[in-house]
Image 1 (cartoon, rainbow, N blue to C red):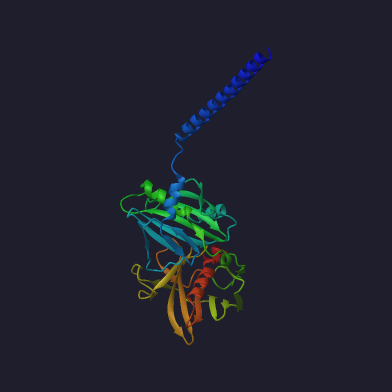
Image 2 (tube, rainbow, N blue to C red):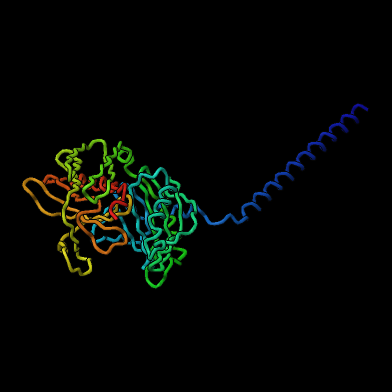
Length: 369
């Protein structure tokens, strides 16, 4: 009897082990089937592969504005004849052009900057906005949050794609401009590469960008029509004010390099550069001069050119104009502006001086009306 019970007990134990094994096997097959089915689900484009493509592109570096990004091999960098330091351009497959602009701002955030920009453009074209703006779309450019929007140029009918970010007190804009016969960019592959290029954007010189800056506010000379102005400069530069009843000078200097802003009763003249239309009247012929061009924070356009040497110094002079104006003029809307630097000057310091001048804004334009 005991032997029978032992046999039955052993048989029962074997059956129990077999049942457990079958359950484990069934669960294993079920899991394997789930994994196979999951691998066949569509998950959209391979983002990793796309990013790998972008990382193999050539690297473009802009040491002056302290950034870099990678661009497709088919894009060509354009050299502007005016050497615009804050604007870089690329031609894209003969269908579009990419322009990268850097503007210094005192806006507290990117939204405030865009609101101010749109307000400035609100009546520049026949009393209407010079650009009709589409809705904002959030996007990521490198490590920075920004916005993308369409901007329709009222005068030409061209529709731009513009992406913006703000880094410290600089606003970077990346503008995709249609060329050829199209009024808008329609090549989807081109737009995809534009966005991939923006993902590779990096700031390359962060410590210098975070240096301390100070701001100077001018006072109104009642006998002159010039408005007051503000200008910012690194704390390593010094200022010297020279005031009289009918004039004032501001000198921003460091180690023999001087930025000189003068407000005095002087006559004005048109600056005629090689791309200027014909003009009858008081003018200066600068058509043989090379120049650098950039914009101030409130979109006033400046051109700086080399006048010549005076003793141990080299002199650079400026002409300026508003966006809607045809001709550059001197003095500027805020007065005369020039650089006085050592004859054997360091180009890097000139670029730093240009960055200071970019911060120049008028603070009571209505007085010039």
